[in-house]
Image 1: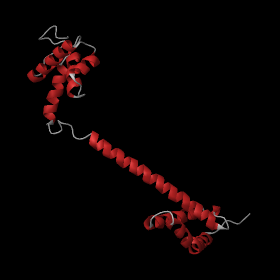
Image 2 (image 1 turned 90 degrees about the horizontal axis):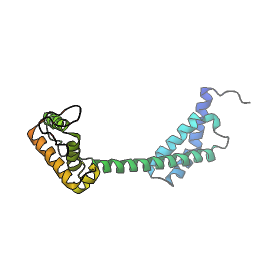
Image 3 (image 1 turned 60 degrees about the vertical axis):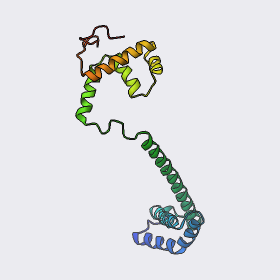
Image 4 (image 1 turned 180 degrees about the vertical axis):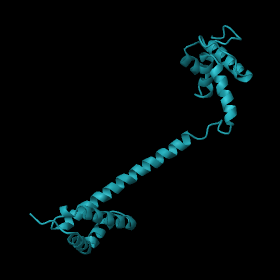
Amino acid sequence: MRPKPTPQDQQERLVALWTGHAPRVLAYALRHVDPDTAQDVVSETFLVAWRRLASVPDDPLPWLLVVARNTIANQRRSGRRQERLAAEMERLREVAGPAAAADVLATERAAVLDRLAAMTPREREALLLIAWDGLEPAQAARVAGCSLPAFHLRLYRARQRLRAGATVVTPRTGEPLTSPGSGA
């Protein structure tokens, strides 16, 4: 069993590893990556060597080259992840561009939301299927589970209610107090 090395011994060993093998590790890295990345690979390789100095074998070059190879592989995986992330961020930027109402004042938005909340659930669904989900009336009628004429009636009433302002609805049924029978 070896005696525990002193910090001075560890520093001397690392310096010896660096002076004896850094040029060969750099040459290995340069065969696989660009010069700037190769410098990073060498630095990372010797950082690992410093951290795991007790694990470095007496013939260190093969061990150092394995560390360099693993470092290059990690950097490539990281680069691919960054590329995928950048592509996903670009896709999200395109898909989630500013909403059409992004320039509407918050107070105006609140008024519209109040009007939506005052609608019957069927009218609100009709309006949202068309305005927010972008469906055609025939598609929206299928989603709402009603005939196309019934859907047109719901949509007409919802638009009228949106233009006119909030109408009080009964909490129990959700039907408007001012126009009975509008739950078509």
